[in-house]
Length: 395
Ligand code: PLP
Image: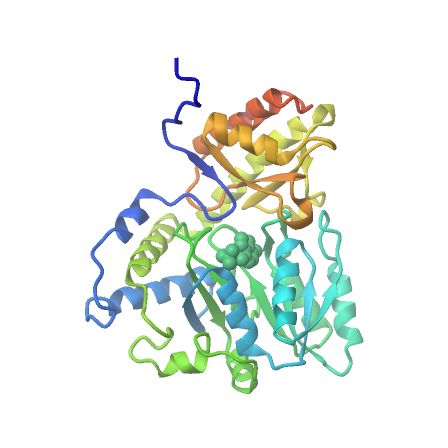
């Protein structure tokens, strides 16, 4: 008898916190012959995507797009808004706030940080205090990762806006919405955000490789004075490219077909229902984890209930148990993919994403695979997590 591992059959369940499961409708939308991006038939598609994405991020102001993952939009945002030697204030939330800060430093920007416990989240009073202490208004921008994908922690942008206003500080307000967009409520204009960083591969359910920046009028004024080096990313260069005017270089036509289908699906469901669905799914995961945490089992990494993320749950393994070994069992035995720990959390946590095209039944498969694998890997845990999630979903 063949003793090699049997190939896995059935659909794999993809529960990563990005990239996410790509729905069949989007796969089919992308799977079409390409056309010239100057073709008259493409311009309406391009415009529909811009209008749809503006609606999703909640802005009537500017939007610029790039062929490149979220890092491209991070870099575009920094280089279009800042000059060498200027200072930004980064609110610490985890791996991604650190990385955005490192990128700014690599461009010769001074980075100040409001330090925070990754499990609890930044104290908004400390943000206000840091801005009030900056009497000379040296800080040019406040940078926040709305939903820290590494730690499963959310920072409310409206609270940060209120702190900036209370400190009467003129800094720009930059928000990374890569893992919150189309999952958590997001309102760029209402929350007074000057630049929004987004990507295609999470709540927008598309392949990785497209990203964008929403920009306010105040952001555009700052852009005209900003001197960091850029060209592909330069918003002023983009505006000279007619008729597309928000894109430099070859426009990736097929990616636009996919994004058009995503905004159509989001509009069909309605953003309020999208947000409610993500909350319900993430709460189901939390109910399961609450049970598993008995018997000194895995527990929620985020210890602040007011800040838990509704798009990704980060789960801390008990001391001495390897999260990556658990993920290998979940993937190898049950064909379910989950996220691992990033940076200093490597091997310590695993992450369940509910962002994008996910429903209760898919998620119960994920939770079942985790609970079986906890048993197989002899990780202590309370039993009945899946039942708790089922009771919640049925309730
Ligand atoms: N910011 C956040 C919050 C993220 O989750 C990610 C990626 O997961 C990034 C930035 C970087 O984006 P990308 O990996 O698409 O370059």
